[in-house]
Image: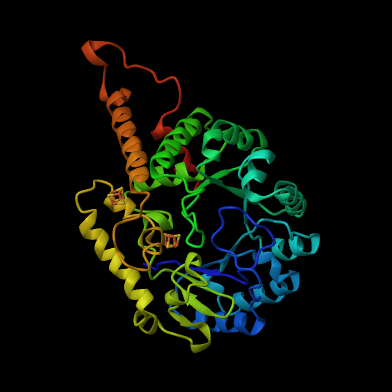
Length: 386
Ligand code: SF4
Ligand code: SF4
């Protein structure tokens, strides 16, 4: 069976925004040249023959300009007919112009953007004016037929306003994808904004309840993904799968990294597209070996955990980037993952037990009815939508 390849292209690490908790932008970062785009396309054509998804990420990828995408999209598509590629783009939308939207719409590119809730909450952590600029870009994107979903970063501060934030997404009809703020590797106070694993776990359970309460009104992507992982008993998103070897990022200079989160960190370069490295060549790099050691480490460290098949120790970046590649543990969000996976599996077990298929309730009484849909109903909805 073919294993899909996910390539993240980082046209620049530059970004016009200045979010307080951001760890991934670099002032004055160059923009990828068209020559590097061509070399990336050439490398991809010779690297495996699996279907490919290409996500443009940053920094802020729209800084590259409409002309960049007008040339890059056909260049990357050429000769790849039977492999996609399927494109996606993650942006703050500030540079979304009608011209840019037309170029992206021609390739039906789904847009992921970032908004952290209502204006006051969002701007308190992403900077004054962020909300207004992103919403202006959102309107332009929608007017040109682009699909936009939002990632909401919950910080140590904003998690105290989770009800208000959820309501904002619900009222505006936005799909919600949650991202927990990570400790910054570039700040003197790395934990200043970071969401603790305990708070993250509580937040996931809260969102599970809300997703069930408002089923059909809002999609909470993380909850869908977590339920899908439990139900299918394997990781269906990168955090809960062995991402190494099937996900790569290409930085502005053509450097190949294990994922966009490592771009700009020289010790994580695995090769460069200009050299057309094969899988064997990349496997010789220290970065590849460190990533694969994590996979082996998880097999031992999580062996006793009942969720190992669909958790796989979480995200290797979270686990090993803060310790300079040294493996000292699994993803620090482990308590959050355990909490939500326990919650989903316990509820599923209870629902199975209470199901009318199991016959009458205790002492011959009629089976109890649940006041709201349960996890199984949500899973059915997810499966039917696919
Ligand atoms: S390192 Fe983490 S974020 Fe990157 S692909 Fe792997 S699981 Fe996903
Ligand atoms: S929940 Fe924790 S212990 Fe269990 S597999 Fe995930 S990271 Fe490992």
